[in-house]
Structure formats: structure tokens, C-alpha cells
Image (cartoon, rainbow over all chains, first blue to last red; front, side, top):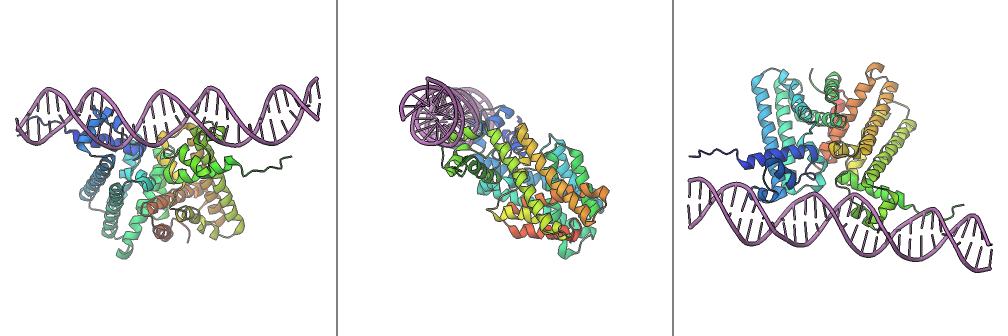
Length: 190
Length: 190
DNA sequence: GAATGACTACCATCTGTCAGGTAGGCATCT
DNA sequence: AGATGCCTACCTGACAGATGGTAGTCATTC
């Protein structure tokens, strides 16, 4: 039986790397800074992750797993069509938290320079979001089944774009205004 | 009188740096690669640009100046409401050209790590786009004057988001589909 | 005594940056 | 006409620091 119950260094590294990646991207990730935040030496990270590419892929994977959980919570806590209304809130929270960006938006920009395993996780993040949105759009009966995935993609892209623009002004209220405009225009349900 | 009229190294550097920045961002910019593409030595770039920050700011500035010209051409070549229809084409062209991203979308992601002068130029790019869109929306009578800037911002953010998502799949047809969805949903005029 | 988790000490490579040099062109002064 | 000096547009060679990565060591725990 594990009495020690140490906070698990691997998890701590993952969390620090996630924060760094959201602020500086995959290219901006570096072992020294992560190690310092965790309180170990850079070389020690290699015990847990054999390479930068592995760390990056693990971070991206954990990121979409966490997002998936958040989305499931949204669905469960509220069965009505207002579930969809809360979707932008997930992206808003990143901005609230030190003006951070969606990890996968950042990595989409860096796409050309990403190792193959990282690319795969980034795409999965988009897939997870689109699948959830599509499901909710159908459940809410807003869009014909046939068009739900198409619309889901549009919503995902638009919200990501809004987050990007708001970040470049360090202005959360701009994000809110953009989402509101999407609603007014008819892209998002009101 | 200047008879020489050499192809102007400064311009050549600027063009190479722009290409590199659209593919790898500000952080991914490096003097060696640019120099090699231009056919000079890395240190020689210092003759034309006193620092990386200066080069970055010059590239971003040139970028929005060029975009401004493209937008003006759109307006002049076509007085009708179909001018707005052609707006996404400007972002599409980046993707056509080696799956490149809008320079300022990339730099918005990197915002935290940008030198102050570069930040300013990035914001100006957004301003230029929003101003043009707002003007055209009013001219086309699609949106009440009072709401034109708000809608312009929404369009800009959504199109940038679509470009980002399409890039992460290296799929231009995805960009087209997203734009079409924006039209169907009512964000963009049909 | 094996596994775990961290350490120290390196390394090669890449980065922006800089001081200093050079070769040609042009204008001025003697 | 020749010498002088400044300007342009590069080059060479080096720098300090950061980066991802490796090898080998050591203490603790099961």
C-alpha cells in the first residue's frame, strides 16, 4: 500500500508543461523552465518523458482529455438547450487564467514544426469539440441532423478565433462581445 | 542620380522574413535561415535591421500595409455587395501558398513573448481589417451602422479561426466549407 | 537486490549579437 | 588630376547564453 502518496511528479510536470505550452506554444516549451517550476532539475524530466516530442504529445493528450470531461459535465449538469450557451465559457476560462490560449489553437499555428505524435493529439482536440457540439446541436434541434457537424465545425473555429483576437488585446470583454455577435448573427443559438 | 537600382537587399530580407514568420512565427524566425535564403551572411542582416525586434516589427508592418492594398483593390474592382464575398479569399490565399497562416494570427498566439513594437503592428493589422469590413458592411447596408464595427470584428475573428483550423488539417476545402457555413448561419452575407 | 526518482556533469548545436574589416563608389579639397 | 575621407553594403569571426539530450552516479523504498 502506498502510504507516501507523493503528489506524483509526472502529474506535476504535466501541469507545468501545460501552463507553459498555453502561454508560449510547443516551440516555447523548454525543460529548464518546467523543471524550475516543478522544483527538480531539467535532466530529471527525461526519466518521465523520453523526449520533448513525448512530453508535448502527453500534454496535448491530457489537454483534450480534460476538455472532454468539462464538456461531459456541461451536458450532465444541464439537459436543456442552454448547455450550448455555456460552451464559449470553456474558452473564456483560459483567458481569465493569465490570458492563456487554447493549447491546440497555439499548436495549430505551429503545425508545420510539430512532431507527428503531437499533431495527432491536436487534431483529436478539434474532433472532440466538434463531436460534442454536433451532438448538442442535434439534441437542441437547432440545426438539421445533416448539417450539424458542419455547423459544429463553424462554431468551434469561430470561438477559437474569438479567443485568439481577445488574447491579442488582453481583453476578455472583447471575447464576450464577439460571442454575443455570433449569437446576434445567428451562428450560435441565443 | 541613382543609376544602380540594385534589387534592394532590405526588401529581399523582408520578403524572406515574412515567409518564415508566416510558417514558424516570431519565435521561429531566425537570422541564419533568412540569410541563407537571401544569399548573405546572418550578421549582415544587422546592417539593415538593428535587432530581431526591429525586423519583426518591420515584417508585421509591411504585412498589414500589403493587406490594406489588397483590400483597397477589392473595393475598387467591384462596387457591389459582392466585395464582401471576396474577403475570405485574402485568407484563403495564405493557405494556398504552402499552407501558410496569417502572420498576425500567429503572432497573436505568441503575444506574451512579443516585443512591444511588434505587438503594436499586430494590433494594427486587426484594426485595418475591422475598419475595412465595417466600411463595407455599411456600404452594403447589411448591418445597421451602429452594429457594423461589432459585426466586422466577429467576421474577422471567425475567418481567422477558420484559417487556423484549416491549417491544422492542411485542408483548404475545410476552409471553404467553414466560410460557407458562416454564410448559411448568417454571419457572412450570402 | 531490484526498481524508483532524482542528481551532477557534460555535449553539440543553435541563438541573437557585436566588433571590426574590406572593397567599391562618390564628392570634396588641394 | 590626385589625394582624402565618408558612405554603402556587405563579410569574418567570435561571444555568451540557451536548448534538447546523454551518461553515469547515488540514495531511498519495496
